[in-house]
Image (cartoon, rainbow, N blue to C red; front, side, top):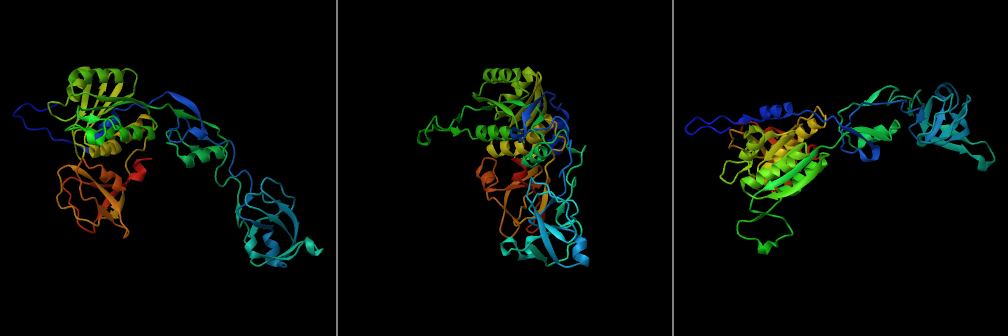
Length: 419
């Protein structure tokens, strides 16, 4: 996939084309499992969730107050005798004309009542301690239906409340529980093998900072990639650090391809003499995508080794982090059956200038400021991981597009990408 010596260099593939090619290569997993609704956070539904009941199941009070007949207060006295007390889980009796029922939030509205008046809008005139029937004065004129949550206003019987392909969050789990779903059918977890390449890499804890040999660096990529994969609902096989030689790289790829859906590597995908990933993958399978027009993250690769997808990320930590978010994340979502995986951006004011537009599509690390705009991290180098910690999102900059102070830019929050 490299150009012959002296031949014109092939243009880098635009990010959107690379992503489309990547997603087109994905066949969603078909194996499923039943899991407890308690344990389904982050999983992807494999079947529609259809309600067998309506929610709410009955008309109920949205407030602590009094159940009344609105007609009584429109045309009669505003003083009503309280004849019953209805708590959540209780069932009231028929409400007679000229009476009210003390009611609490979530309690069924008694037959005959068609409104609830907040207790703050009522004054108690008498109660049983006075030796007289409890009586209230209603200081407002309620409308029919006021402060009543009607049966079925949330969910109707037979509604598909959650379609297959939904990635479950706490809100979806609560909705599933509200219609009685104790278990959910979900797509099995993708199996992902992860390893890093590089003789310079050292694991934290194995060598003290003061004893680090010249040229050595701690392996930060392994930590954030492992946990990003777990957040994406993956079952991760951590294969550690692979030395910079062809034989070791081939052996690691063969081992990873044996029983995983995806092989994810970081480092070794550039064009140096010690970058062995590309020829190793090509010797075992195919390399269909290599190098894209993105900054940071140009040396990104995708191919196949047997039934396993291979994805190679750059070794620079910010490059690895960004390419995971913009390419690997939607890939893994599609693998689990999620159709809508596009990054969502919002327009936010740039409180900075970016005059040096690049030919590639850029992703700048930025942070909201107190004035509602975005500040730019001072060092946008692909090796400066502090930029990803300091920032709360990325600005998506089109190729050749400078940014002027005060201009609206496309902001992609980390919050939506890291969940």
